[in-house]
Image (tube, rainbow, N blue to C red; front, side, top):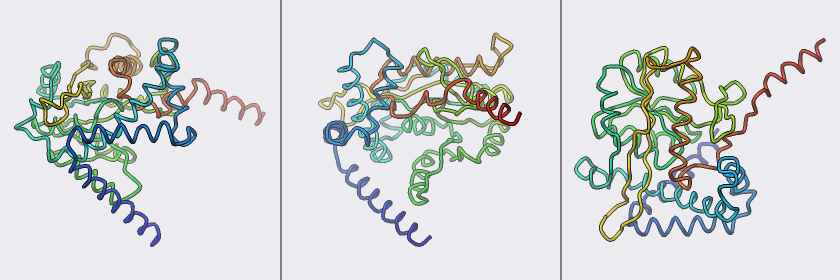
Length: 321
């Protein structure tokens, strides 16, 4: 236990040093640093360590023959640039983003749809994916006076977990553990509160398989189930980085978009859970297509295979027989 504690402290110490260094950089310097780090990860680090093959396979699954191998390689490189820039933006966000400069940093699209949903008195689930700067979107909602329960996985390092908890809560939100926090989520939606979560992770063989880029992907059906049971409106949204203009802007500029509003009271089929799950998954697909280089392609989105669980059950029954 003591050795684990020392390791956690050393990890956190190194993390704080990196954060302090990033906070001293300008937006232009952060962008250049991200490009250098992406070059190192993509061109120097062996592919078996940088998850290159996973990202390339995911892109081939998603875009098929639309991209050449050169375009796939370029997209993966740009993805790493984006991820490193995102780390810098998170470190700089508390100091550089305030209510006073919000409209200088952000461009809003379909903002009225989200505001209208949040003013109905019903709970709202703000749903996004690992696209753009998803942490930035949460902060903006807090600044506008819409506190939410932010659903996220707890980190193994308690010091890092506490830092991210404070970061996500500094604009008025409440952290809810992805594993073990379901009762808190229920309490929040039952009281008319709002939730923020990501909905593009692989849900395993127990998940609901819906279409994502033309291939069946296991998706958490608990999101749709929660919305249907508690009449919660789902707002699918995202924040993505706009083209750099360092000559005229002191920081990076983003666009916050409400892609689709899904009301469980307006579903059209009897299979409500599948319909809602497919709706928000399709909305996330449209989002990713707009800027694929800002999506987290190293996640195994199509890891689970439809029918695999059923086959295992059949095999066990045959063996038992």
